[in-house]
Image 1 (cartoon, protein in one colour):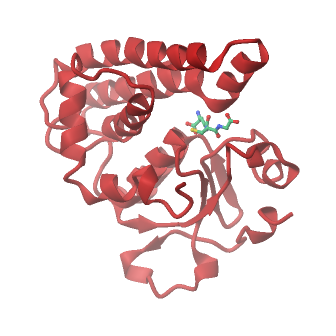
Image 2 (cartoon, helix red, strand yellow; image 1 turned 90 degrees about the horizontal axis):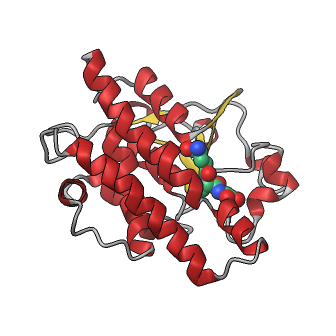
Image 3 (cartoon, rainbow, N blue to C red; image 1 turned 135 degrees about the vertical axis):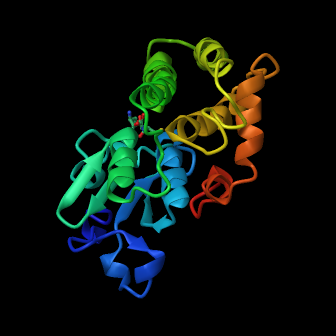
Length: 235
Ligand SMILES: N[C@@H](CCC(=O)N[C@@H](CS)C(=O)NCC(=O)O)C(=O)O
């Protein structure tokens, strides 16, 4: 059980202040370079100035379906967070946990209505776009006889549909990020989805605010360092 055997049971998050901690004490993030959900968590860690040990689950090779990983996360999905005896699935739950345990800089605005709007955008990505284009959904389409070209059309269509709704909301909000001058949970979800949109040749011309967010993110180290191509498991 090579993956399971590497889980630290005494892990905690390492910050700039306690960088001298032993490697065995660092929290573990299970991910995959091209996983947009893991990409979200990497950005959040970077914005908070936190580090976690990354362990890689090769989704294309199906490692997420193997017993070694299902022993860690029975859902067979990444990201997955392990910190001592505490473990957590779901990127939004992990990010909100990090935000609550490490409040600076905040990833949500203070005002309840503003917080709700930022969450609305994040959920539009995580609930309305991402799950329909997930690998296991695409694999199921193949099993049902859908060819690769139609599969790609499927992904492109749902990204465009979701982006139209998000862009309409963003047009009401100040830039350059989704909710003003500082990145929030909304940007953490949008930027990885834009990466995926490029993979499926989505024309971003109609999405002015989304393009503005992508450009703003290029100037923030946490977003740059989290890019799939910069991860140790990138191919
Ligand atoms: N809602 C979950 C989604 C997790 C998810 O679907 N992860 C994808 C990668 S982005 C995955 O592990 N896919 C494996 C598969 O489809 O077999 C989250 O936000 O963490």
